[in-house]
Image (cartoon, rainbow, N blue to C red; front, side):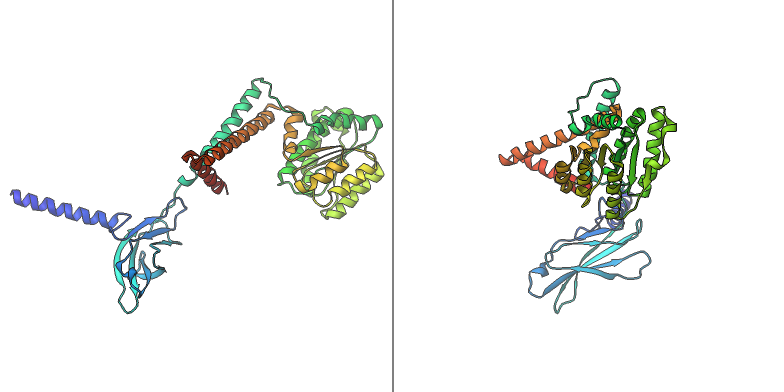
Length: 388
């Protein structure tokens, strides 16, 4: 009786081992087939050890054959050169079971079967290679949230003075005293451009001031969608100032999407209306100097702001004040002093400072050949690749 039980147990163990070997992702010990990690599925990686035939001069390649669901026999799906011991099979059906066989092919000999393996492609919800990107996002969002909460709690957040923004009230006041209009140009890009969005938020603050001072405002638009958004923003600004009836529909208008046609029209407005103050905020290109020179010739105070580095020299030369780069994005927080904007601005600045600090520390550690420096360099490299 004991012998019968022992034989049955041995038979069960052997059978179970055979089943698990057939179902395991790696298959037999010689050839392994695995779902390709950190992707949306549809890919399997097949790997195998080098064949003894590879050392011979007649060796040609490794052939990979596949049998999928419903296939009666294996079919060749690819081959690799000597020394290449992995093959990635793509375009597969997620959840389907595939079997692979690898052969070592040599001239004048029948292909030698190195073994077979089975695997099932599946998509992953989380890409572990981008964990550092997730940590970075949580870190930056945490800092921004901290400063927003501090600002809402009444804490005073220091923001350095920006000359161009300090002069906004003065420029609007000068136009009011002279009885002349204010011209606001929000660049030559569409509503999806971050610099255009920043320009529109500045326009809302300028419009509220012009409504309070009852100063005429002229807003010629390059893009019709931008025109619609800016018209509503100016209308809302006049309403917030308690003077909704003072808003004029024709003060915000569309001209054309022809670059130099638009510039010619705006230059004509400057010459005819002679605004006392000109604002150039947003994305500008080859037309920047044409606008700024014409405004300077009419004697207007000019405040410009753009994130286009190539256009900054022209604005700096021809305008009274110029917001450079990220100063354009900080203008909304600077002018409104809204806790949400101030907290976001402060949080971003501290996040940049932390990143710069890590880069400096990593540089020093790499110079003195410390392994931690290599770790930091790898961290930022994979973070950049993940963000891209």
